[in-house]
Amino acid sequence: MEAGQRKKIKAVAVIGGDGTFHAVIQDLVYTDTAAALLPAGSGNDLARMFGLTKNPHTFVEGLLSKNPELIDVLKVNNSVGLTVSGIGLDAYIAGQEDRAFYKKMLHKLGAGSFSYKLSALSSTIRYKPFRSVVTIDQDQYISDRTWMIASGNTSLYGGGLVICPYAHPIDGVADITLVHTVSRSRLLFRLFPLLIKGDPLLHTGVTYKKGKSIMVQTSRPVPVMIDGEVIGMTPAAISIQEKAMHLIITT
Image (tube, rainbow, N blue to C red; front, side):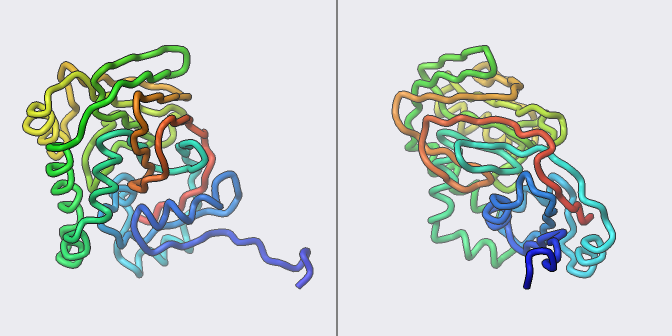
């Protein structure tokens, strides 16, 4: 077929979870091709954030009738994502959870989001904090005891944990949550229960910031994730790409 005869692809429909969608959108950002997600994963944070339907018939109707919406994208080193980037403990949890023997079993039982919570508890017990230097636009934040650094285009990760409560995918900025200088026991018994409940972490040792460009340097290499997928180790350069992708929101 000649190039001029090829039909333009208007949309790509994805059936799967946040990780599957993450893999697909790497080729769709900055193009005119839209994406739509029928959630069928364990975490489904993107579906929660946008209220996406799980009904196949409603999904197809929305795919055919709704106009795509332009949303912001989070770029982390050479990867892009739509939800949250985690650095440190949360990325370590994601890696542990992906390898956990109970993940598939809980997903089959319809309790996929519980898998992340189990991994969070076991991982926090043995994880060691690190020193970090975080530059947000022109401001620098240094901590000798950092647990994790989350940068959100949306508010949720880990199967519904509200880590960046004020994030919004069309406001042109990333919301950054720095968890530092807190004890292991407080992290386990005070902060994680608040995340599960969905409340903001209004505690000493938790700092909320906003910015367009974030650079994270750490005293040792720590894992970096985006959309629940571990993509490498620090250092990490993170930025918001405004209105960089078309999404069909099939509610």
